[in-house]
Image (cartoon, rainbow, N blue to C red; front, side):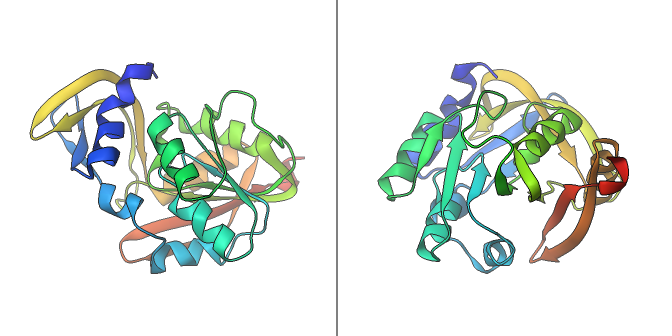
Length: 216
């Protein structure tokens, strides 16, 4: 992703203002900036309850999850390519790095839990490539906790999107994926991962993925 592509999102975090993604055919994908900036909620807690530390939060945003984990005595590190998001996480007193998940990440191959929440499974527009990379970050008995970004079964869309503010597209296009839980589980199997848990809460859906021993 081009560095300037995230500028509308970073401005929305600073201004606490609304911003969405718009696809090349005009469909809107809303981003819940208010929720990202708030503390962890009851739905987030269903994820936190499944975390074994230390935890890596990929696309940590302004740090509500990393902060909540720290408050529960679970060590965690956030990584995000949005520098404003990293700065906001640090301001909360939680550790975070400005880092692309496809670049070198501390603790590669040793993380007990890796999180990908808030639709960040769409990063880069290639779910399979992201899953392979995330699996490489896991320790031998580690788990990925992934939030899907579509509740419509059978959804597997590769999109070109831009940010939009007040109905006006801003910034350059970049790749993004929209995927449902059934499709994510299928893609995970092809990447040597198995789904061991799947749950929904208040309109959000999550999967727990581990290395599939049958593929070893």
